[in-house]
Length: 167
Image (cartoon, rainbow, N blue to C red; front, side, top):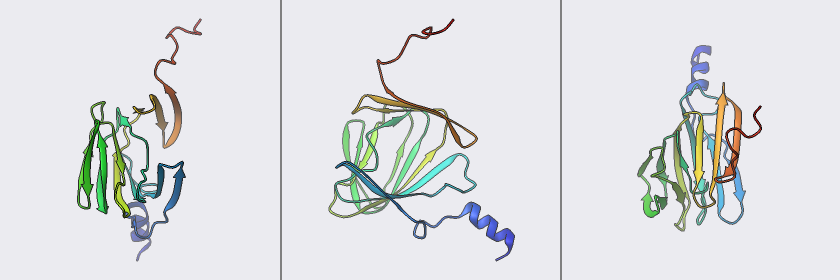
């Protein structure tokens, strides 16, 4: 392979079967193995990850996005999509599309006895506000040039007046 072809391959192609997975555990509900596929690629407006979730676990809390749109492609196994207060079955071959906005809080739960594998694909629209309905939290974040410039996690009702502390 030429140097140009090697450089193009490194910038544009990832193989989820050859990418090292990172193990994550948080309390009794959250556990996964994950690789962020687009890290280090030429991608600018998309982010993607490959998630492997054991039975009874989930990757992240029930949440919604105000800026980013997400898509999940179930590769192997089955589980449950918790969305807008409902529980919907999902299985291998399903493609789940979640637009931004308060209408679609969502979470994928592996409710099966086997492993659940899926691709998570999202836009990287910025700034972003993410809301967590179960805990009443929100996260506001902004990035500049690939670096996180601002992040705040809080709860509604704990804010201050617009003019507080101003001169």
